[in-house]
Amino acid sequence: MRAAQVIERLQQLEGAMPSAGAAVGMTLVSVLLWGFSPIATRYMVGIGDGGLSPVAFMGLCYGIAAVVLSPALLLTRNWTSRDWLAGVVSGVIGITGYNFPAAIGQQTVSAGLTGLLDATEPLLILVFASIALRKAPTLLTVFSVIAGLFGVMLLAHGTGPAFGTPRGIILVLTGAVLWALYCVLVTPLINRRGALPTTAVTVLSGALPMVLFGAPKIPGIVVGMSLAQWLVTFAFIGGNAVAAILFWNAGSAVLGAQRAGWFLYLLPLVSLLGGAAFLAEPLSWIELLGGALILLSVFLAHLEAKPPG
Image (cartoon, helix red, strand yellow):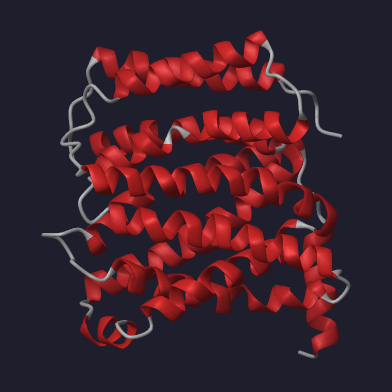
């Protein structure tokens, strides 16, 4: 297929802006995929588990993801230097900035606790969006924040072993802060240039530092991984590093960073239900109440949000 035909197909794909309902569905799928991501990361890099180099593992995964998304770079032919600067900065802040410290932190922080720490992101997005828009949040928004945070606290009561060292917790929280900042910074670029090329540029920009820092250990990882580890790796690449980011960017282009951000409260709920489904972990009424409060928080946030456009 010629380059012109590839560009035409990509433009057709990019031109299909999702409806509000499709945007909600894409955002939910991305959160579902991210809800299982800490389990995969912990399995691969955790001390006592896979024990792989976290930076090298992330460099390998996002390096492959960048190659998979590279055809979409053909859609950047008309990008300005301002667009490229915004894409590169967003990629380094969001892709490198989240995955670099979070993967290192997960050497000593459990997957359950990582999910709970990541649930601080909706509040952080609210803060960054309010600063960017120079607009104070409404009372309903504040109530939604409180309901969501209280729900997360109840989930923390019974998510299983949730351990972590202070250094690891700080690293995971640092990743959460930088991802929230990414969500606010990248939205204007997505609205100007589209989700597909923006995802390609941000993933490529974010992958490069991790590939460079992890390069000395990547060959050893490639040679030494077992079949099970390769299966987890490819699931992580396809689900977390490609599909989830693309769906998130497409969904947030329609919903807005703040409205989409509320779905991130579902991360620990996904982990909790996943543990019950796949690990036979029991559910208590306190955890169910926490999940209900999180769902209420997301619902109230959508009542507050203005219709897109």
